[in-house]
Amino acid sequence: MAILRREPRNIFDYMQQEFNKLNDNYPLTKADDNGNVVTSDWAPAVDIKEEDTRYLITADIPGVKPDEIEVHMEDGILSIKGERESQKREERESYKRIERNYGVFYRRFNMPDNADPEKIAAKSEHGVLEISIPKKEAAQARKISVTH
Image 1: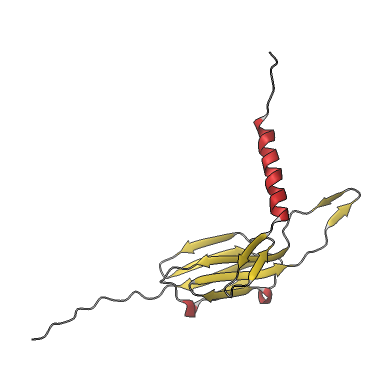
Image 2: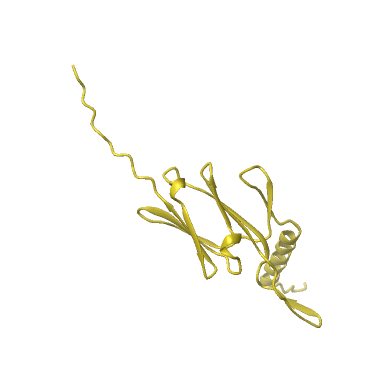
């Protein structure tokens, strides 16, 4: 009986390569708020934090000018859309090295009912987009007197 040597890591490497091929052939596709299809080449990493008075979304979008970022709030959905242009790529002889993502990005987030869409503020500084979504003031319970 022959002993077969298997290396599980190779199986995972193969699966990762196949997954990457699938992503290359089928970019992320989503419908925007108007029902139009938006194709996303990449998705920026985000942090979402809930504070006492607001929600805070922080997204890493280096290389994108603030006036080229679109932030929309409609029907309880916050959308972030933009594009990072391809820059000079390092090419030598028979290899390329491209580690950063380029092209169109698109992210959508469902906002809770207590988010106040009228007071949303966004700013971008040093490649970090910060979106502040204040919470609506909680409705205070009031006592209603019953008359005779």
